Length: 526
Ligand code: N01
Image (cartoon, rainbow, N blue to C red; front, side, top):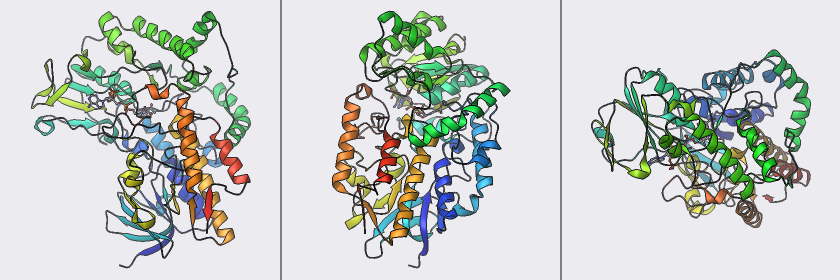
């Protein structure tokens, strides 16, 4: 078969994919980008449900590497809406002139390593056959939605919507009875909007989550100015791997009273940034308990019906060991007459019927169902592609017992294949745009090193990979994360190996910088 030869295939046109494609093209590589969506934006292209917003402040959730983009864009709100972030992604694509590099509405179906040629043979669902020296999977950590698989699913007469694959046309909930299944970030953000329009909403909850108030507001001229003044220091922190916000010392040892006072910062609108400002929150039970107690007290104060309030109080995992949500009016929405919480612990969903959802206790008649069931996180987008490395070994077989990667970017036995924000990198535990930049710049440095040295092949050293996997595991074991049935632990997908997927250490960028300085220990070039 005749294959079109390129230097690199970049899969994904989210923020990481766009930057990767841009860097490679600017340094003279022939790049073919492939993107399943019709346009750029990645997660922000797909997650269009009402109320979708970022849970990281807008001024921080943007490219740090391009001054032209940064200075030509003004975020309007503290937490940007999905349409504004998608508009920003399009603004980036325009400035970078990235679209000509991409085939849109196209999926990579297979990538097989050709040992003799030191190239990847890449196939797409549009029948295109490529041969590439490098494949870079910038496919996102939360890009494969968990689909409902309840009996009777197809019998339901009304529309069924998945938050992670939301339609482009507006959905009209006015006067409708709606089921919202799931109570993660997607449901927590969309519920207040759905409830404001619908006649009745049933929220089906299996596990309540901790949600922190966004206290969203427009960004004032003064805030913009203060951010610009702080930018050089902030950028320096990004590049060196420093925290970027002022933190209490890690050995902070408060009295119970001081602790109870300090955890109130969770209600100051800082969202996930506030959680970082509580030292050892995910390591020290006493500190974590105080934070849990405080948030539960806020839930009880906000939700009028004490029985509903109690059901909304998480008790089965330490705060922040599942990603905390950031909301606007989530808890008070349960004070509306048209919102009912259905506790699935009292009776699980048994089937979807023609008229609605039947649990072990009752049938709920609805006109529409919103499935907010989460994602096959971090590995889903990678194992769904038929990736075969040396000796034809499939990636999903190599990862049978859990993903093994070097620095979250390379897999031993899969030369010249890179992942951006892959398992074993901090990715979703930090600002993911910046996590993507760190990986993209590192991959680019590897590729440039190969060009300068005349290498055809780079692979992760097996021993270095084992050491990293072990380090990632041990770091997680020193925390409270393993106590939660979270998507971080792969626990939300039946049959998925239970391992902590992201790297919890805070020294990742410093490690990358050291690896660059030391000439890539852990990688083998030939
Ligand atoms: O998904 P989730 P999400 N029967 O996995 C329930 C990011 N994000 O899309 O917990 C009944 O958190 C499940 O119940 P349980 C963010 O990183 C960010 O909301 O498994 N229920 C849970 O309640 C976030 O963490 C933003 O018991 C079932 C829900 O579905 C990540 O994406 C916005 C079920 C899934 O919650 C995922 O969030 C949105 C079943 N069979 C998302 N299966 C921002 O703010 C699952 N559930 C940027």
